[in-house]
Image 1 (tube, rainbow, N blue to C red):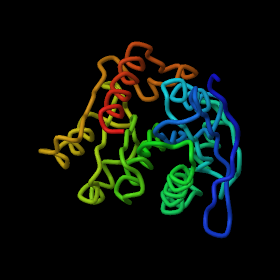
Image 2: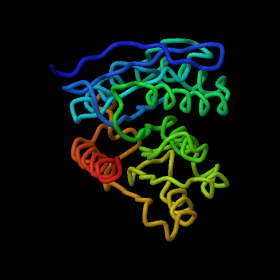
Image 3: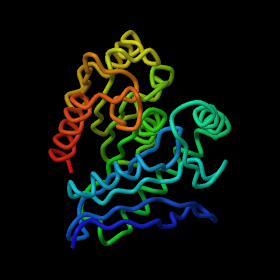
Image 4: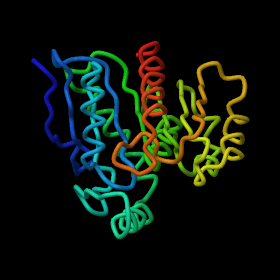
Length: 232
């Protein structure tokens, strides 16, 4: 049996929302929540979930925008980008963090999940991974160029789980001064890692973006697998 994938319903209070589930060969493993950018659970995010399934994880990409517009799929430029920003601005951040918690609970209830539940978020999703770690709903967090974390550093003290950060050195959205602020808040934590990639810009992990940086993406993926593998 190779990896398989399907959309599932994730319970959320009296409601439910969708998520793209990718299962590893053999059908079982530790779990990762793949948290979307502002562009929805699009082809790229589904491919990331598939990639982690190939790495042996039960991967779930929840539809974070479901409360505003379900199953949106956007590209990275022009009107689509503007639409993504608009959806993010309409979204209640607390609801989105709670939905990550619901996704984690759904994974823990699955017989396919045999280990811990991590969250890996990209851009806006990176901030949600950080906030979900502060909420205590996940066991491990990984934030790729999480925008706005430097503005929510009051949450840092609540994070008791391992967390890993990835940043592009050339990222104008998240200057190195902001990364420094975050590093300072986590100083002395041996279970917190910061990785800064030279010559890499915002969105360097996404092969469908102009800012894609293959060496940085490959290195970051390897570091993420190592971080998870040592803790899952």
